[in-house]
Length: 314
Image (tube, helix red, strand yellow):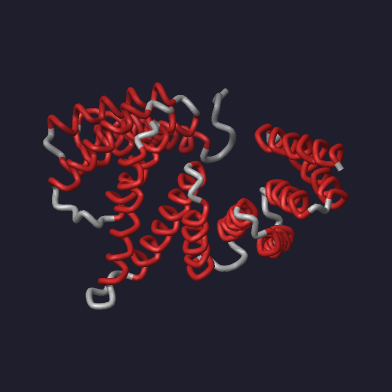
């Protein structure tokens, strides 16, 4: 009796499986032995750990990779690992460590020949600005946001005489939009609403031109602009803006339609349309509860409380 054959070709399949196992083992051994491959291997493991939500394990793998990269004097790998470690600290809310790592990554990139207007450097500068904003270091935050915006605008302006690859132009435009959006949110927190409105208008124009009117980010920026218009007492413009955004959200099945509905309800409330506000708040609440969006639910209840207070005083 021949066991495990499974018919003609069974033994060949068994041999093939063994070959595959040995090949995988040999590859793993090679990655273990070759420092360059080992660095890549550890970075991949860190990414997998991050995807699984195990950031502590990811941080451990990145530290191991950094040690090997420093021993091998691999400046490109060192810069990349610093960036990943900084992003990890940023996500975890360890802002002081993230600041230190972003600065180390930027120093490494500049030392290896990167230009100051390199998008990777600007993106890290933007994160530093947001860290300073969170830490209430307002002068550093404002300087950081403005440096990012000015640097990218100058880069796009220069490309008329020094053409950049098309994909770099698009990436630069989108990064500029992100900087304007982030600065606008900071300005709202500082109650500099007119300047925030200007930033949102510029960010929206970029998103419309580069990504199109129906892109999810364009719709959200339109909603954010409507919110600022409402804050500055421009309820009619705010209503028009959020209505357009909501129509696009419905046509594209936007995942954050409930957030737009909440904004519309608030604008209706401030226009004195209490009946309309109550109806739209109800729609927003149902959708938010379906999506289990706790933060949105809280905001909607705050809006309903304001509505209740206003109707009682009438």
